[in-house]
Image (cartoon, rainbow, N blue to C red; front, side, top):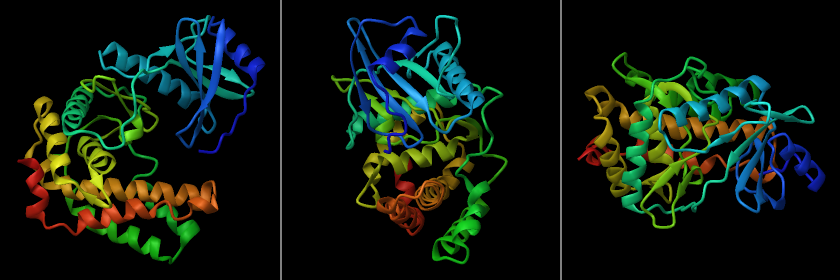
Length: 313
């Protein structure tokens, strides 16, 4: 990621004082993320993550902080928020919102074992049981509601044409029978922390949480965790769904829409990468970054339905 905010020891100390945290022994920049700058802060007793929200408004940062506290109240394990000494959910550094969280111990695994996939499926099912708070958005900032933006910066391009084809493909699968819930919407391996015994998981980074179709969340997780070399791994997908359905059974409409929503999820993230790296924050070395997810969207779209539905067995 691009590091937007460079902090020195004095900066770190100044921010940490707002949280009553001292005796800092070390700090280092953390990789990952494209909209925040993250530092790991180590004291004699604890490790923390200091997040500078580079693109969030104060209100949106507050809402994310409230969501983390709301999840904790509902016994859902994720990053634990630390409030300031004056009981504010966020602080400020040079006009940017700052969040402080307890560091999650464990590791990030790119090729997640089947047993862990089942555990992740269960966690997602538990998440979808939690009532969505009113402040969550009801559309995704990179969802189909925003696909039209490609016309502003990529008019008449092959990419815009492809997005229109995806919209036409997924449109018949939207139904009033598709349940909505509190969803994460961005479950990739980089947002999963696995404990050292590999028997417990924690889903983090709820930056894109929304009150949206829960089948979209499942589709995105299939894309983020169950694909190898541009194709869906049916075995991995089966284990993920097996875990999910221990908590929530998919209804008939969700089952019939899952393939289309998996395509939708891959296409939505393809759109986000294309828009962000080619238009919003142009990075020449990342111009083609979207292609990996486009391949997945096309691969799942072209799968025979009978083959795809095997993951529900």
